Length: 442
Image (cartoon, rainbow, N blue to C red; front, side):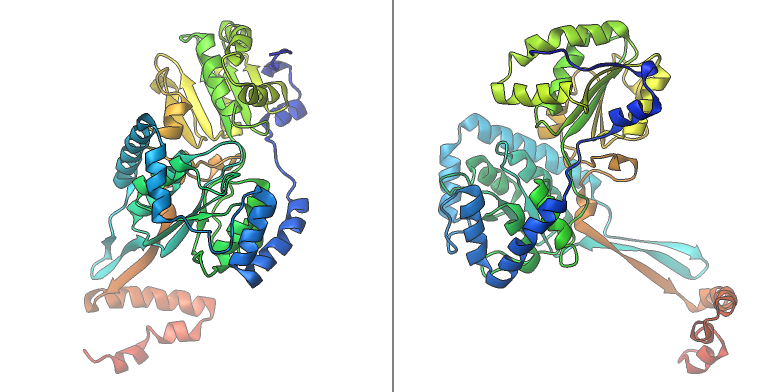
């Protein structure tokens, strides 16, 4: 590290300075919206030809209109090309992710007796189809395949398609294909960016139209989702990675620094804070960061340095634990790690986070890849109201009601009062003596 990491004392900040610490890097989508609109229009009109043309233009990959779909031979080659340890790790992760989401799956239907003879409940079932977007800008992400496809599979979605940018040679990343196979998905398509979003929103000869699209992406992807939101469910946009490491006096500050770099290395637009009320922890973390950055590649160290020296990252020293907790809850981070020998003692204090990882042996690395919970999490403060991607994102509820002759009279009487008050004549008539005349069973 060539310059000092941001070291901020919370009690020395003005209200505006504290607000800036809570901010994230947010892309201005206006220029992207203007640029993706013609891409979407072209895909809607030309289908595969436009998808292939834009893939050649933006991804610099030699892909033809009749070569967008992965073939069985592609899967075979992918399996053969991967080292056994990678294949084993993918299988291990897939098992844990599947087990977690199976436990999450709700019962198919429930009914409860609201009043004597009156029953209400939900029927829960899968949506028909989904497209899982797997990015490939700053690397290859087989973990994103499993985190998006496996809960969809567990939910019972019948048609699952993966869209992912090809590499410079026009091929799909081998680990992505192996992860797709582990998730039980065979439809994988060589396209990314706005053209991929448009393809699954409108459908082409090769790429199926889907009911929903999930997964993170670039500003091009986010802008495209916004423009096709009337044709496909685009879910909650996933922004740049963000994390807070909360550390108390029972842990080594050097460990806090090690874990601080996890999300910081995702990209210069990430956010990463070490929040602590212990000066010794803060100082130990600051001192060791240069050495830890030397253990990373130049590219990833560069990303991390940009985050920790920029406005969206660094070390935040708080005057006491209460102010540290208040900052974290106001921030509502995507990832929150509680570094403490007794992390559960702090757990109830934290109200807003996409995920909370407890203790010295639970770094985000485990949560991102193999622990089981989903790593597609709400960012940008959405953790105040939103939840991680789950089987529920691939299911829909249908309300069920059933009133018997025994329960009808009491409900009808009260419903008629409300209907008359609100001025709905037909509502009131449907539960009046007029109904009794038409019932087959008197």
